Image: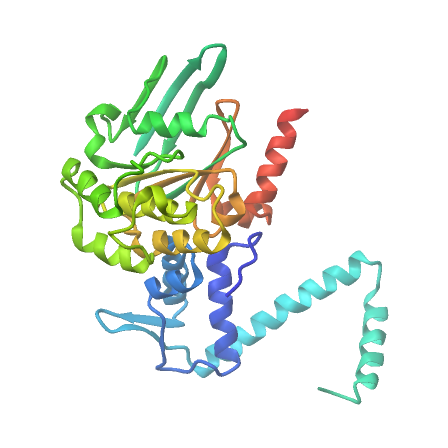
Length: 123
Length: 232
């Protein structure tokens, strides 16, 4: 995994797990890399990985069982929540960028509609 | 914890350290960043007990550096190994000085780094010599690991091997690693705490992740900004 060095790395670790959950690449009960394995594969500070895993435990995305490893415990409602939260982030970023280019909501909406037509209505 | 209290050091007409104050916390990987001649090597050598402050004090867990040599594994910037020795002989030499030498780890690392005990230090490549220096430093189970420019002048693949080794063997929470380098991009995701040093003073210090949260900048960008400010 490639990290953006201008954003906190522990958050990027959490986000990458969230994305894998949303895409269904990880499911309830799946075992994820140990902190050490993660640090070695990504070549990042083990303390940073520890921080990310602790936060994911606090969010109840994962659970670490002594001597067993770390497992996904995220439930369906949580996934919906995570997805919505990530969508809001993307939206906020998009609107911010468009605003900084001088577009109004009305203009943004009409551009989106045009884009929808171009794409043949929906994804 | 390693404390620098108003430490000054002069070499001839050059003021290498200028009332430098810093606290390097225990259990972290610490980056000591700055341009050439900023005072990085002088600081590291002082922790290793290889030079002494003219004024001020350096304390390692409350003790003077010369009392703490057993706690410190030091990787110097220069080629300090005897060229006529094999890697195995250099290991035996190091082992005879330090009780914390871990021979199993030495053998494991030797293999991991694709080195061989029979190799003669004078005949191996620069990258292999850099790996040998790393091997001999990391095979000790010292609580403090000081690395002075461990990546400079080394090819990218060897750099990766060196960083892999550090991550792999790092003992979270208990071991403190101080890495001095002017090549920050290589260690962006490796360091917990950073100290930017210039003209013998700490210009800026803090947690790498907090810098990213607060400034949305990489350490390279922060360093460029910090030192541009100095020039004005």
